[in-house]
Image 1: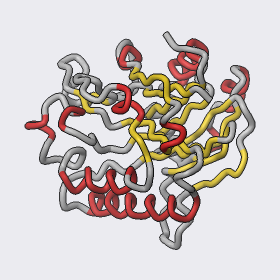
Image 2: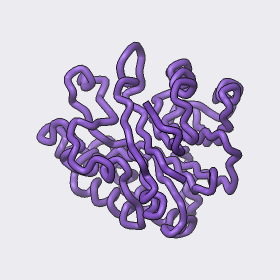
Image 3: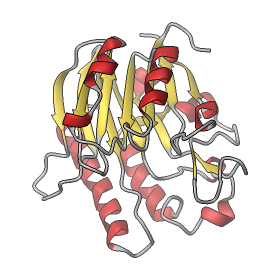
Image 4: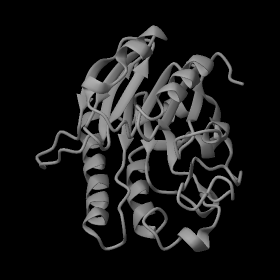
Length: 262
């Protein structure tokens, strides 16, 4: 399925404990060089370090009890680890972890969903995007190799939404949400999937459990691997493993990845 190029993957697993076996089986079958996980829903103490280590991975984890939580797994030793947005705001939510791996600054994020338009959660989402842009200004350089991976809780384009009329007025698709994401992209990032497949439709990464979205093909592409220009130029492929969304007790998200000739 995949080549021997450097494989970088992002996956919102929606509870590492609930998806424990599925995650380990997927890692063993696909062997990504770097995988960014979101929505762990556990503290560092409850993360399966031993199991992922048995597969050759080193885990860099920023956990939180019950909610959120992010991790980067890699075969190579990470360095220059950064946990959290590191600004002056009092925010206990575990939504960002970053490390340099194989010379690439890897940033794993779980962007807030936003709840409902006009809610406190919506305001928090927009503010979090502002803080993320400030994080990039302080900690990264668009002229250096970098990937930004995660669940962005925004579908960038109408082509990334199965039913724009249904979702268009909600927090995943409204212009203000897309503008917030675009402000991050404008820092100097390329959407690796759209660079490979600029017009491909029905390429979704998330399907709502409550609406039986997967069975009805009602998905959205809200999980992305972004790369700075120099690294994006070396991208040799991109994929969404939608098959992993099927079967018993899947995450509501599929693994999303990019391949790089480095």
